[in-house]
Length: 176
Image (cartoon, rainbow, N blue to C red; front, side, top):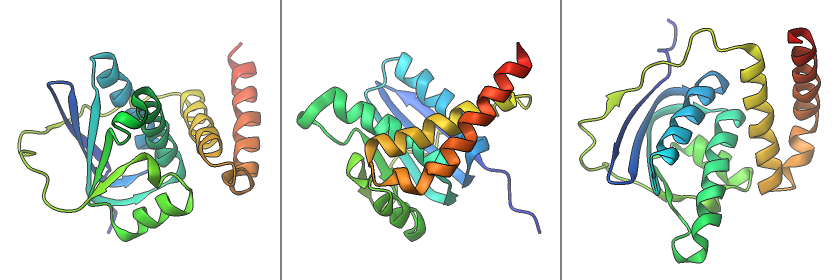
């Protein structure tokens, strides 16, 4: 039996974004997620709430994109309101990953039923022809962000970031 395709549901209202992550939050979904967060930010979003109750797995690329926004919003607002990205119901595996990679401090983690989430709309899937260059760039930036947030991650992701940087250069040369 194959796993269901991961997808996002969302709503933007009164400067707040509500996003539900369903399935495996991996590098493919990270590109769409990054676009969605960037779009909401451009619309004036000041707080993000993510329901992870149906998110079965989160890879380091998706986590890097998420952590980058967590960092951006915590720096923007300083100590006045440090947790403008709320994670609702992450499973134990995801919570442990957040802790182990040293990024959990960027989020408010809560448990319980998110209220008024019935009207979330399915996000249009990202462009199926997303280029390998865009995916590689997103992966590289996400891993660099994890290292920036927690320098202890440099050793963990040293080989990955090196490979991605080299691959991105090859892809850019190929396209020129």
